[in-house]
Length: 235
Image (cartoon, rainbow, N blue to C red):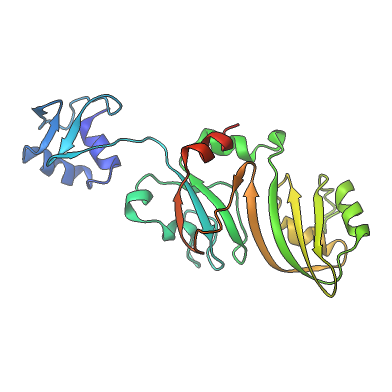
């Protein structure tokens, strides 16, 4: 990899700013000063330092976010703030994107990464990756609803959903449930409950595959996945 591209990717500025750094003679690779931006380096093995600071290169980032309501799951939007707007500059430079979508008013677990291969695996219908949600429902959720979800329900556009696992945590005029689906249709959980005459008034994603939301992660904040979490996610 070219040294100027590496430094730009690691947040040391634009190509012009990186060129200025190189001219100052403060970029050192394996003990030797580099001034030519076209010089090739191996970021995985070379000892590369800028003004004495060791560069720890990483190609991919994997971020667990506790998505807050009011932010859309996109990299850019002309009307509303996005989840990417919540990232610090040192993470935003890797250009991570949300894996799947959470509705604007839905909160909970959201994975952001620039690893397109992993994102594809997690979102592929063939993989049947389960996504579990907690919801509060206006209306009494019944065992009949559980049976309907187990078979799959018909949405307002005629689409027949795959079977889903519905658990009743508390029943009554204001029910509480957990539901696990393996699809990601637009507003799917809300539309599934509408199909049985109920309304979702609060929705939070708890898990995606083996990745479980860290409940100690404050709403609107994020952190990198641990090596164990990443390993489980890739299974």
